[in-house]
Length: 416
Length: 112
Image (cartoon, rainbow over all chains, first blue to last red; front, side, top):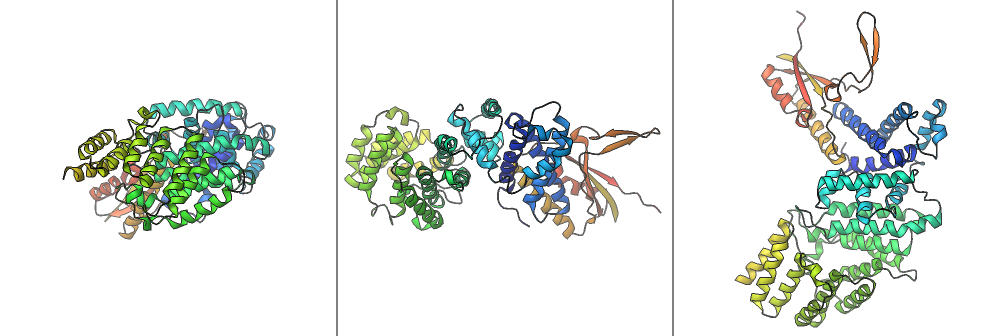
């Protein structure tokens, strides 16, 4: 029997959530040990005896046994979850209570509860995303560090600090109270948005795109939409923009790791399943009054998804949408994308003019596609020497081999 | 042909869930290859990490774990090969040895 991809990752996220409910967030270290032990047992036994019929059930049972051992050993030394504290202290009730709490019906909302706990308003956004990846998606500290191109020690410190905030909450977030849920939902949405963007735009040292992070963000946003309180127009818009962008991933990054920008992508490689899911979610997102940044980004992606190629794209609408987006968020990256859209509808000269007017453009100096966009437009107006210089600046700030290869090929075309 | 026991010790190295999955696949592939080549005499059994130790004439019973986590035997397999050199080559290719653990190669003594 073949395990699905990332089976241990997703199962460990599920088990961390359920054991956190039983042990309380103040004991998340114990939770991690128990999960590590249970997965270690699975590894031992499965590798020698072959795969069990129901690996997921096997793992949860192993985790449950570990949990009971730990509760017995530690109950005099620690306070466990205040939700069940008293019952966990009695030898008579430990076993049956843990059985009940790890039952498939009982664990249904545990991951959602942990996700909301991670979206604690006292944590920085980056910390929220880091602990979601660590606890819900089974990323080790090292893997989180790689995804964010930062040091292991720095991520370790961030997660250790976050644990203290989690510990102060004690019990997992209660997702049954609508007002509490709605109050924290925007924070959780924002964290998932950042996670997705890190995958879609934030290259690592190895790769310009990290599809794994995109997939995890889509998995987690799906959990939000599984809950009636989570089905807000804003969350629908967020899910729509994720699917519509994820659709392009197979064309954006080839199997051999080559990067292709939107203009040159082979659109027959776009994932139609994602396009369709994204369009449906987009339709659902428009039922309310709210027009959030997620809505506008999803609408822009929707325009691209409905166009056969660059030439037949409705650039005027895209420019209008970027105008609306800029009114909500005066970000230089958004302004850059708006300028590129203007160059498509009104010509390269106009594009260059708009790029020259970007507020806070100094924040784009380290962004390779800022220089590449300028170079592209300069080449179109026959300013080859300027274009070459721009691409060389892009090359200097490129973050990974695929970006460097892409930019190098432009320099070579100009030199010919 | 001679028989040897391969005795596994894990090393207690922590792995991330994705690394565990890769390791599991590696172990299963490794074992299947040995089975296909007819080398496995007895697949053995995995041993749990807890348990008890009974010591000496007084029959003192101590709780496990028995030693440092890295020293605990986690399982064994009996293989049938030409000589100890071949058994050692198999042990070298064992994923347990490649991820911080160890594999002890011991001859099975004949009764006659």
